Image 1 (cartoon, rainbow, N blue to C red):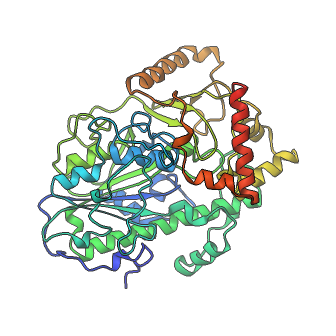
Image 2: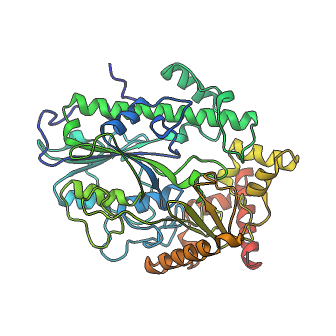
Image 3: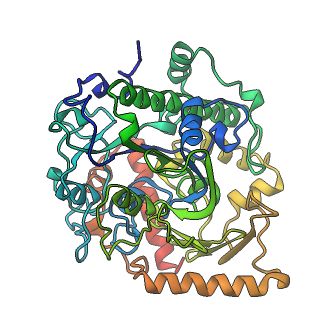
Length: 487
């Protein structure tokens, strides 16, 4: 029996028209939280991921796909509109939830509404989407719940094509760590755990038992995600829908770690991106640069729906497609932690602009500081037990205003070439390219964010007296102090 209840139960629902071929392809997005491209088809050696590998074998795998925002809500706001989050004003994490709301500019419309207008049944599942509940959305702007018809394609009319988003927990399964319950679940459902001793870490993380265990738990999240992907494929096959369905598999950003999630290094921005379905080349590998906002335009095109002229994403499957020569990313406020970082990445080089470079890389953030791995890193730093590379990249009191990396020679982005005279021309070229992108796309990040746009929960946090919320209050007060000091 196919084990599909773990995917929020909805995959046990009966199909309304399983035997009826769709006149237009169904579009299914599988979107995973907090996960880099640690799948065997992407070169991960320690684990096997046969279901994602199958999608790649039967479809097209993109090796250089990147998000435009390495944190959940800005990323998803961009994903569902096909626009840069900095253009539509959704660049701060969990913004527009206070007294001041964010509305989409001009004619910008969430993608499900465009699919609905074209006659598609729209649905979104995952994250306990049972009954009338929808799956994870996490959009920063105001939107109408009616853009989704439900949380399962079973509710559509006979013969009606569907647009479905399957939202998976991904790296969030391991929690803030250590997570014995997760480790036990992996043993029950997958048969074994990944051995921490076998883990290969980036060179700037110490081989401390806590760090190694967390990474092993993360790899088990990748294995479990692969099982869930298999559940989706199995249901489509059982209902005779697979041959009429385009499946996209991707994540919302990279691994949640000290230099991953929330930051513009490849650890935070590089994602898996696989597409399989009718008219998709089989076994193809694409090495050109794409952005995650390209998913919206590509999905519309495959469904035969006109791509609106306001959409900034591109149809990467078009015969006339011209590959990008660069991709861009932005990091702004995450929770209570203010930040302003921009980057441009070509095939070989990455340029990062730290606008608040007087602040440390790991400036206080309640969410990240609650992670066992970050607490351990801070302990090792305080005890002077980190090597020079970790100290420099993670705990320097300030950061350079500009960073430049030769990704061909330095894929881990540890050797900053911004002050190297041999790379002066490259630095200036990318600096100008980033500035032009900020101007041409109407980057709203330089405008101060009103307090009234903060998550309404922030007021609750600040009014309570327990330790975590006192820590949050201290972090916000520190932000205010830094602002006064010009940091």
